[in-house]
Length: 141
Image (cartoon, rainbow, N blue to C red):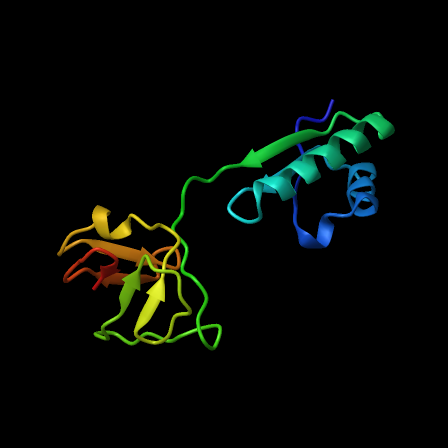
């Protein structure tokens, strides 16, 4: 009996029943769904597909729900991205808006209530560090 498992992450490019069935036949043991992306409804559709296909194919495919934990995400920006330079002021807001070089929205509306002057906020998996200088009802400066 093989003790190693083949874990495959399902995403937009591998969401069709045909593709999932091919992955199962090719040796996938575990179908991983990344809950950091997508909606709960979309993931439920994937789970239903996986269960249907594993029953049809008679294969013991496990389903792994990767619930990495809560992450605060930045909203959209005018030109899809911005560049920050060291020392530049940048404000985070709980208001939903299209951001620019000076201001960006976040998905966590309570952020201004959770940080204080002197707090540090990490962006892009810690590649960027912001230092909080002031906070009001909706903005983190």
